Length: 227
Picture (cartoon, helix red, strand yellow):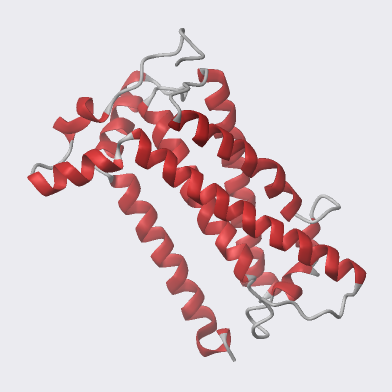
């Protein structure tokens, strides 16, 4: 089912196989990873995780508003402390808990993922808008992460989970939009971008990035994470 007959036809995994490394096992893994079911299930699962984390953070924000001295379940140490982060000004940048944004944004992503799994194809303008909004969300998530790391000097476990899940949703959404030609890229740039995702550079890059983030946290705080 399609909602946009004017949008460019999506490029299916079969059309990109010639750009990927050869080998039977690799070909099977490659085909699975580029299949709509895998992409949108990944998006759906990541958005659900982010929604749950946002819900918990919202409840905690309300509890802290009622009693600033309350002990939260995720106050593990002086470094791993949701309460410390939640009481910083950065946690309410727009005058309300940042977690409320997740309660609004993630259901939209879940709707896109579920509808796409059901065969719906959204208009190009809609997917481009989703990409733009979620890119801003990703930037905001990493701004909060850097503020926690280097200004607040405390990390919120639920916030870290949101950062990781937001990264995975962004990657999945970008993968789809590059594959389907929804981004306003010149033909040559689009071809290069499609070649990169066909070679799984996006997956390798995200995995390496998340490992780097984990290593940066450990290197910065070390044993102090749990003590």
